[in-house]
Length: 257
Image 1 (cartoon, one colour):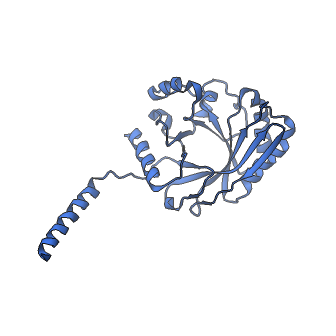
Image 2 (cartoon, rainbow, N blue to C red):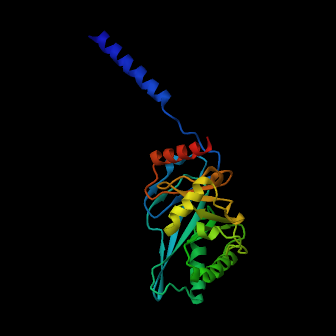
Image 3 (cartoon, rainbow, N blue to C red):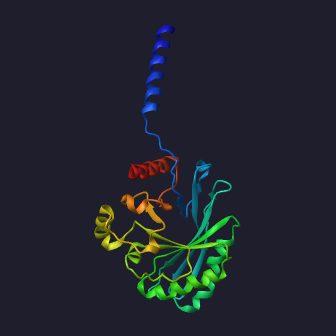
């Protein structure tokens, strides 16, 4: 009986070992990867010793009709020690008039700078604002104000709607920013048109939008030409886990094969 059990156990062990060998393994990615970490409890210690940076939501500015409200991060966040981290401040418009008056510039820029320098380990400050056409002039002034108040050694970046990046003369052309990250997800009413061009590689981007890219875990992967040789920001609408991290790595590796 013991001998029979030993043989069965040995066979199971061999099968398990074979499955382990056949299982596709995700290698570490060679290109810079930055995970967007939004407002939810996150423990990212499983990414210790990985070549990953973290762009975490540190604060939110919300316009509600005649007032501006500020919300610093409220959810716990654990990031591996000595990681490269980027502070992200989100600007939201929930007002009826959708007007950002210049009188708000000092306090909003002060809040963004405060959020970005709060942690001495932050290497960069990123503004995330899906500004409408009527809000662009305000946004341009805000970016200049933030840059003037930030420490000189701290980089400043912007997220960008893909529609902003398809013109030869983008509105942020002469702004003092180090990086513009076009977001290849949540493309709005023209998403089918955009995705057709993105998939066949015919979407032409302004040079300022070709230095980085933003993708999402729950949308299509863009054509290889948009991912190659640049930092890749990844947005996840759920908690980051070892499983969805490995899935994204495999998806990106497939694009490069």
